[in-house]
Figure 1 (cartoon, helix red, strand yellow):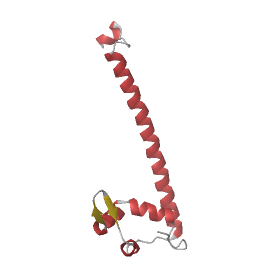
Figure 2 (spheres, helix red, strand yellow; figure 1 turned 180 degrees about the horizontal axis):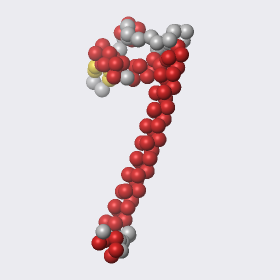
Figure 3 (cartoon, rainbow, N blue to C red; figure 1 turned 120 degrees about the vertical axis):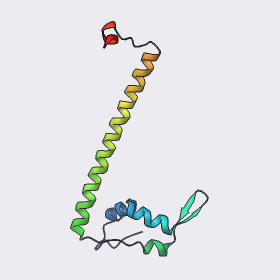
Figure 4 (cartoon, rainbow, N blue to C red; figure 1 turned 60 degrees about the horizontal axis):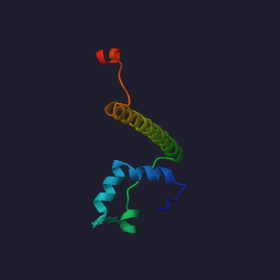
Length: 106
């Protein structure tokens, strides 16, 4: 799908297609076969795109990209914290890490 970039930015279209609005449309018009979903070019072209002006599209796309980057950062942090927790729990269970009597009382 290649939009007319004088009217619609590709990154804006991509975010719109991935949004609940876009997913709802594509799920409603797509054909589902075993482990494969497909959509014909007519239905793809019929996707109703609410057009904002190009400056608004840029700002919206930029904000969504920053949010995606922030989410990715938080997911990496969460993964690191989960790994730390799992390693600490494993060390405690295997007796590799011992709590002193002072820590055990608290």
